Image (cartoon, rainbow, N blue to C red):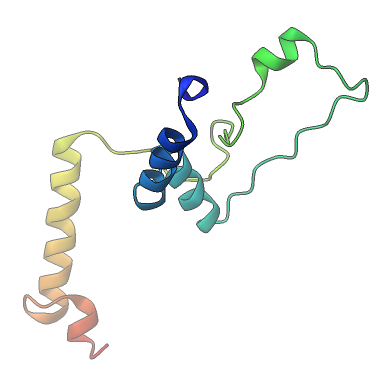
Length: 108
């Protein structure tokens, strides 16, 4: 698509991206802020990659992490479990400071 654009049209898109970056770049920035670093990909010594290598490689500028590499807990998608957690936190907060969050009740 971008190959068919004029330079002025491409500059328009780049200016838009300055204020509204693509989601995959924002995700990569957030992951790096959390300490994730992409693996270095070995450069082919022959200078020419095979078609299979090119097909298996991630797109330029897109960092892909293997499953489980970010050491994040699994998401909780069960509404009942989330409600139970919230109730437990609310109860803990109330007992710590009569309805005030525990940090406020402790003077923090």
